[in-house]
Image 1 (cartoon, rainbow, N blue to C red):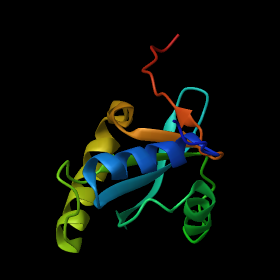
Image 2: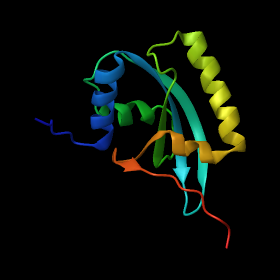
Image 3: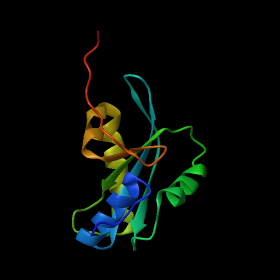
Amino acid sequence: MTADYATDFDEWLVETFARVGEFTVLIVLVEIGETTAGLLCSSYLHVIGDETRWPDIVEMFVGAGAAWNGAAFFQADRAGLVRDPVARHRLQSLMRHLESDRSLLKHAEFFDGRGLRLKIEETTPP
């Protein structure tokens, strides 16, 4: 039996929680252009249950004050939760790497403003 989810994000969160248990996720808000992905802001979140849904996440993003249309989610550690200092360090490291190589976004769980899964592909300039 499969559950009904309102968004791809909801499905991803529930399935990840079932597989890993509690986990920390690094979040990067992005402005997606026709051939660009601009980094706007970032944060991390400790996921301690599978009840969070996309509208809850969008409400949290309102506080960022950024005009985003994409959100990339990276697990901070495959094993699950990490402490705040570790999450902050890994987020800073991730942002440094993304600044120089946006193609790393293809390794994220990436969603649009409606919580639907996106796929990032590299393009070659015309």
